[in-house]
Image (cartoon, rainbow, N blue to C red):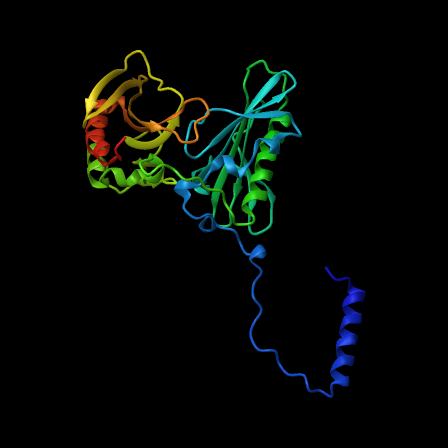
Length: 327
């Protein structure tokens, strides 16, 4: 920024030049072009969000000031996972998930403002965990979640939030240029699909007994929810995920649905009945520990409805699985 005295001197010099030119100076045609580096940054500048690379948003080296960081096996197309070793303890950091600001916990509070219309919001933080979000100018949030691995780990809340802050800072440095990192999924990867397009909305809501079109598609389109999230009313969710191994309860069974081997896993509580239905797809192209791609349907009904969520989930799988690309 030009100092006040320098600006005054420049003005005097400009007047002198005009006088010397005999007043021949005219208006300069055209208009000022906004500097892209000063324009509000929105998620539209990221390109195809389905292929956004969360691990490229922040490298492990971003956490070096706190401890040695190493990548861990992925749990999602949309989040990267690293472990930061501080002394004898580890802090796990998940980062990269895109969500609308309205989808964050209501107790969030703004803790900082940044350039290009971005700001930092903190939610869900206590002595064991810290969650921060880089919120873009269009209210899309990029989340960073840090938590200590061991219940008896000797790490303070301040240390954990410092790690989360490092993640937010690194993501900010990456995205402020508008050059968000991407990867090239195989032609038959689930990453290329939009989860909501795999199921007909009216039929899903009909099976849920819902009359209003309550559908939530996450920005990267790998997660879709029909009905209201939470456990008070029936809902269904289809996720495209990655995992090193398929986990299920002791009540799970393996069935053939729409020509695909499918795990059907009923769980729940006295108040809620839940069923998770999953099918394995292909090897994850960015695997660290043998991760594979999965399509997962989860159905939830309050127990009072008397509805079997696995019956509904199986019907949804019969519709969704044929839309998946070949393995």
